[in-house]
Length: 202
Image 1 (cartoon, rainbow, N blue to C red):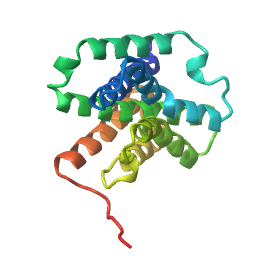
Image 2: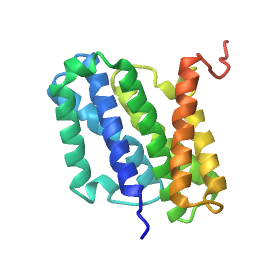
Image 3: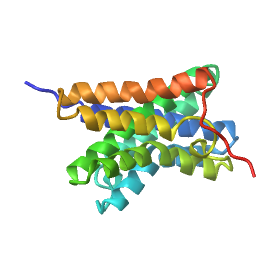
Image 4: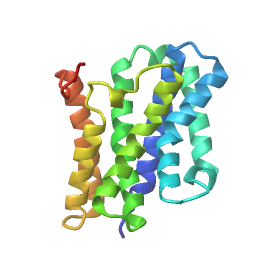
């Protein structure tokens, strides 16, 4: 009997980004409502844009009660344990990297299911992975990571390309795991060794 890991990937990605968004809001000293909104936006922002682009409306999180409840529970836990979480900034970075990998694969799968070509699927994966964080950073008055020198979207593109190349050659669940690990690893290695894309100056 085969086990589809896609639901587990989606739940894990939602939790990872909800923690990331909520903690970013806590660091900016937003009130409880602001923290909740940032958690929601970070967790569902990329997926909402993805669904609108492929014409899947109402968007995914509006079709079920599970996603909003997961985000609400995650943000509540983040608020309650913020003192402990604050001491684990590396862990929070890992949550963000994990969410990036998980949501990239979810976006690519949605594109494949919609019958789109591989290049567009990779673009959808990148949007799914990055744009919740973009919306979060814009609302918190920060320059989004995707537009700075840090390797962020590039990790999604590399992992997404690998997924598209391997999906017809290997076990699909194994390919998902490999691609997620690649996205996370590129992001982590880039930050650890201060790797970045070239910057341009006027």
